[in-house]
Amino acid sequence: MKNRLEEIRKQQGVTQEELAEALEVSRQTISSLENGRYNPSIILAFKIARYFHRSIEEIFIYEDSQNGKEEY
Amino acid sequence: MAKKNISLNIWLAVLGIALLAAGGLGMKLDWFGEIRGLPGVLIGVGAGVFGANLGVILQAKTVERDPAAARRIEIEQRDERNQAINNIAKSRAFDAMVYIYAAAMLVCVLINVDVAAILILVAAYLLVHGIMLYEMVKLTREM
Image (cartoon, rainbow over all chains, first blue to last red; front, top):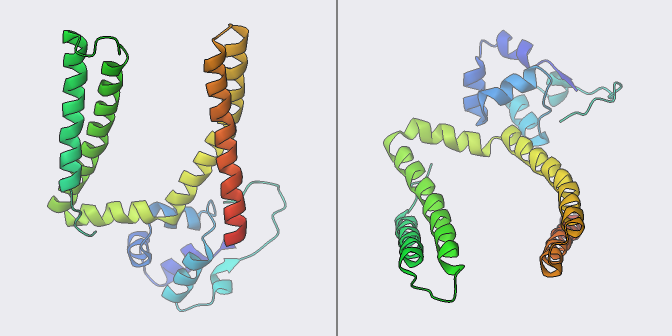
């Protein structure tokens, strides 16, 4: 799953630390989300969408996994 | 992070030291006579109880002194990625353990270890799988 989290966060002038603090997750989680190494739970995805006043689909882009790589 | 009541942990840490001391002295002064394994058990249990509770006490003291650090610890503990990492690591360790247990049982048979010891290993192996099946049935009903 791809996402536009980094782009939207930077557009709004929010640092990873501030976003992590607001969502009550670690900064590493935000970093991993932005790098596409970790997919959020549906609850965290909703929290992120609410924080930026966007829909989940505007931030997270679902695509079928094609390379067979394990996703978390 | 809510302030934790650590009085029970302090008592348990003291109990741990007492067990440790009783085990050490018992071994030195031969208090337990025929029950030769008891001092070793007391030392092991005492060290475990003391260590576990000392950890809780030290963490509570750190939290008291530095609320910002306490919040960071709380976030790290509740962080969903950390929890996912923890669960995946445990799951992989369990998969490895199945083979390690099987190999250990085989080695015990090959080196003619006492049947009772092998049966304990087999029972532990089966118990672990029984727990896994129980959890699977329970989770299937709940989820």
